[in-house]
Image (cartoon, rainbow, N blue to C red; front, side):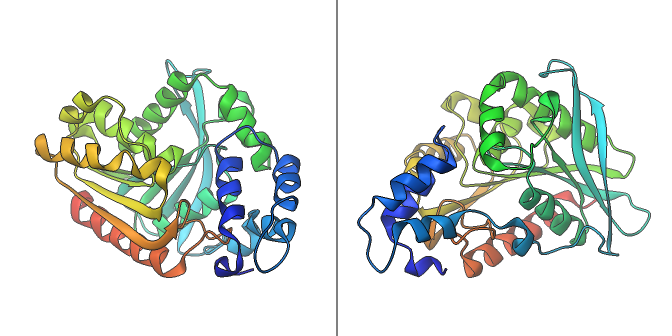
Amino acid sequence: MHKDTIDPKVFDLYDEYCHSMMDRREFLRRASALAVVGGSGLLMARALLPDYAAAQMISFTDKRIKARYVQYDSPGGNSGRMRGYLVQPAGPGPFPAVLVIHENRGLNPHIEDVARRAAVEGFLALAPDGLAPIGGYPGNDDDGKKMQRSLDRGKLRIDLLNSARYLKAHALSNGKLGATGFCFGGGVVGFLAVRMGGDLNAGVPFYGSAPKDAADVAKIKAPLLIHYAENDPRINKQAPGFMAALKANGVPHEAHTYPGTRHGFHNNSTPRYDEAAAKLAWERTVAFFRKHLSS
């Protein structure tokens, strides 16, 4: 089902489902009760649920890359150990490194695919699984969302910070580190920029929350490329203050808002996906990382 045929009320309910403890059954029940234009709210809601197999762009057996799961220490995190999906380009390296940070449900197949896309572009990519300390991504987003909410949020961020440090120091890394993330992961990019200072060389958040304390923006040294959806009031209300703080502190940055898009427009596993906007945002992301992460 194309996004243009889905009633905005169903999109809004899906956004609530993604960012709350609402489970799939309740989402579908509430969607079926909506008065919608052009069809059935239930069918529209079912169409919005992710189809990861159909959305895969780069196969895990693609000859241009080599992918494997790795474990590493994470002092101060939720268990002291972490696990991630490491994807390297073909060739001996070293490579510029990019951390790919998941949404609020752990390392699902879509984020693994994004890591493979980054590796195809020549980056050593690591997609950490924040759920690793409690067993890892469970195979479905509903349970993953509940698991992520059960974690100590501060320790989860430390696990992702340690993931960034692990990647930057990796033998295949050229020592230059970028970070990108989506929704929750976009907010983590901001956290890393604050905590890592000059150790982060570039950050690209997709529709992520800005740092809560404007004073923290002064600690950011990495240039930022910030992607916003036009129809995303929860995130966009933070943008003016964030842009003002970045400018006041002399942080190099550029921001793009993509017309006609909703939160999650880069995720091609659901009809929130906007192909033209996602392609442009990704092209800008790759070019930005190449500019700032070259040896």
